[in-house]
Image 1 (spheres, rainbow, N blue to C red):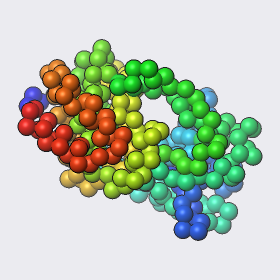
Image 2: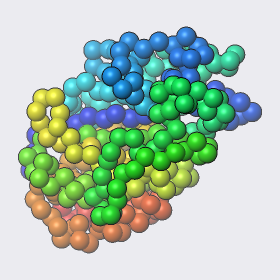
Image 3: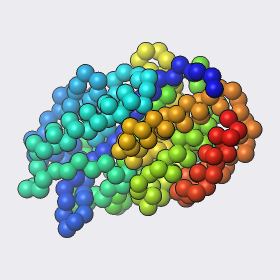
Length: 300
């Protein structure tokens, strides 16, 4: 297989929660600012993504009700990603241990779906932009490589009682990403998407998320600070950030295979497996996903 000079990144989302009657409820950074003395280090002019932890290789910022990781430089390998993820999660867990919310200890919660009690937030939504961000979906535009009629729209979710944690994966290093990002996502869906279905420890939560944020073809085209063009594959949840280093190596090996198939225009495989992949992801059908990956491995 051709040796591509790929670079990787990720911006997964996790949650701070309190445990009430054996159930985790999300407590957002905005709510911690208001009630627990949390303060930000920096924020954008729209106050959408304040930064609370800023280290050499990564930062943690607010995104909706979640904590979102930013990896500050493109990475060459899964082991680098695993090391930064481990370090950054330990740092966030330690950071949260210094705060509480209304007498409750905070927990670091890394599953793809978390409960929310809107009553904690709604009194502040109209006066606090940061709080408001947690009650709309679709505030930053994305695209869909499969659903041709998809159009990202803002939606009020004040009555929705869960929130979803994404595990978005960034890839650059192929010139064709700029002109053909949708086709690239087809192949990443077939490789990364199916691998995540097979290996997620939370299939029931994945099924719930797939009805909202885990659609098979969701992506954003990206141009990074170093000038490179890439794609952000947005379908996976945050469940892969808990993989072992060995399992993460497998995930990014499949990312490389997807990029190789895209680079070599293997439309015979996308014609054969894309629709089946979409159904496998939507229904979290691990058996079908495994069957597809085995077929791709034999054909690549």
